[in-house]
Amino acid sequence: MMINRAKLRQSFENIRSLTEALCDPLEIEDYVVQPIEDVSPPKWHLAHTTWFFEKVILEKFEANYKPYDPTYHFLFNSYYQSFGERWQRTMRGVLSRPTVREVLAFRKAINERMTNLIETCSDQDLPEIGRLITIGVNHEQQHQELLVTDIKYIFANNPLSPVYNSIIKEQNVHLPEPAMIQISGGVMCIGYDGNDFAWDNEKPVHRVFVDDFHISNSLVTCGEYLEFIRDGGYKDFRHWLSDGWDRVQQEGWQAPLYWSALGDEWQMMTLSGLRPIEAAEPVSHISYFEADAFARWAGKRLPTEAEWEVAAHNLNSDLQSANLLDTQAFHPLANKTSFLGNVWVWTSSSYSPYPGFVPEAGELAEYNGKFMSGQIVLRGGSCATPRDHIRLTYRNFFQPEKRWQFSGIRLADNLHK
Ligand SMILES: [Fe+2]
Image (cartoon, rainbow, N blue to C red; front, side, top):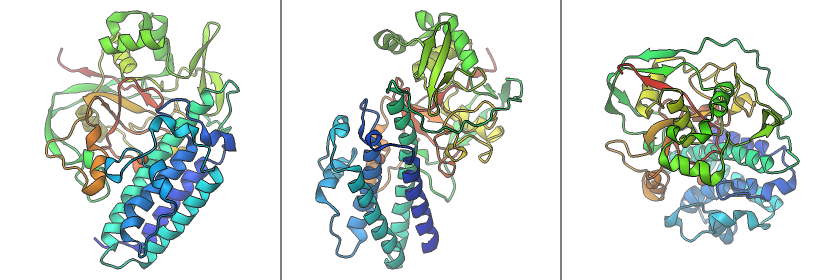
């Protein structure tokens, strides 16, 4: 495949500058905080995404390569055993140095070296460099989503309830009636089968049997979820998986993350500050356990990932109208009807390799495959996912108790009961 150097450079530069633009609303102190292990300091995201380009590409392909700072390889490696020792994940927030200014200088220097490499590398090296840059760009897009969700967690844990984004999108709600749509099953193909970029975990395309099923044309809303709460949903073990019920007890869950009681009403922390619950909005920041419990309470179930993918091909999965990062709402919106966007949908499928799965070559074999244990697949992208990052075959994955991502519910049901 011919690689266009100008397009590659443009794609690289666009992604690098968007990451920094996402940090524009931050004050310097916001960059360093790590309230829980899952939530990395924004400064760490800025540095780690830069380390990725230096380690994976420059170190191999730059003539007379010298590390920008050898200590950064230790500080900003995330989980790659094959790249050597690394700073503990739980301690990212104690690093007051390097400073934000130094990390931004690191980004600038690596950006210059990368663009120089794109312009001057041999035609022979270009295809492999292009392939790795595409992975690096997609990696950085994943961190853009994490930046948004981590900033939300950092702000939500501050009693001053800081505002990240003061522009609240209009939500003129003219929604179609919620309905369960019948989808015909059979032996279906799922997985990625195109020529553009996709992660190794989306491949290969393969056949699965999916029975006829129903899936909702809408996401579960805050209003519907409130009915579950008011009906004692968090107090009745019968709705819950055993591990989920244990979590409810241990963590004292009574509502989605970021919801707080205000008298008889509920309010929630958003990236636009604290505000009352909006009943028509898709519910977000719930764990797999909560999604599963809600579905059981509602007399339905979660879709499998195969069902979700088959349905996505059948229903309105318009990318342009979906609420994704580029919409800049930074919050689920009630008036979006695309099957994609708003919130990642918890499926009932464990994250495991597709038949014939082959991990990415070299060190990047660690990227996805080694996490295929104890996690659940989520589909569809969220209001924090870049528009040119999501696909119908995209498999996100988190442990079932995680709540800090924009994760929600789309109900499914058996056709034949
Ligand atoms: Fe990463």
